[in-house]
Length: 95
Image 1 (tube, one colour):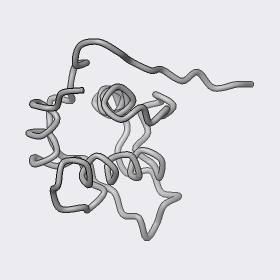
Image 2: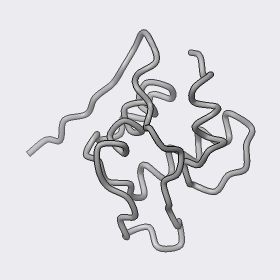
Image 3: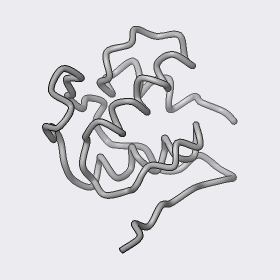
């Protein structure tokens, strides 16, 4: 079964309400956060960076890597976690 991947163009998609998603790249097979806010984050990353993430609501290795890429693009500390600095950068991000 092929997984549905969502991509976005145009205006900024809705962002997660909170700005903290925990992730540890040393244990990449562990899922740290799940739910609707993670889906919003995945949709945002697909829109912002064309990451082609599966929007499944699970913050695993692929979402962590995409957050890392976003942190590098924005020039903020790379920690694989979508924290308050990432959320602030996301709110002002333009394509």
